[in-house]
Amino acid sequence: NTHSVTQSFQLIVLQRKAAKRMPTLELKGWYWGNLTANEAKAILQDSPEGTFLLRDSSQRDYLFTISAMTSAGPTNLRIEYKHGKFKLDSVVLVKPKLRQFDSVVHLVDYYVQLSRSTDKAASNPQAVATGPNSTVQLLLTKPMYTAMPSLQHLCRIAINRRTQQTHHLPIPNRLKDFLTNYTYNV
Image (tube, rainbow, N blue to C red; front, side):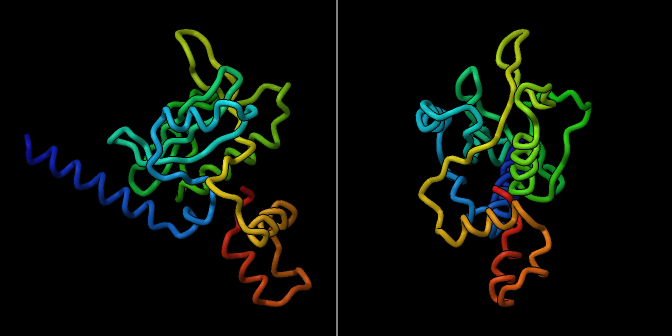
């Protein structure tokens, strides 16, 4: 049985390394790496609802955790990584099946866009279980940066929010390449 535990641990280590090699993960500024749940809670404590960060999961079976500020305070959402796909683990959704993504950045980008497009007063399909029979609305709207991103990166995000057709913009090809190198809205 020690052999299967060792193999399982080695698989998790390999998956972690593969997932973290994604070049766009380091570009974010909202990926904090090896941060504990208590450290994340302290960082988010005085932030508005919807503020979030991505960190390495402290639980062995998960690669990443999203720490987010909700109306009930900071909470942690584990991200599963199985068969090369990422999905949220500890979120209760109205839809029966959680979406899966090719990268953790796609996952975060999707939920940020969903949170930004969902009117807070309307029923939000994202809810986080916080107690025996209670849930709070999950919003991921404002990334908590480890350091201020470059002006170029912030401009790229602003342009990506406005258009997905950067190849039609009247700018040099070098700038088009820069824009398409990171096509996310967060």
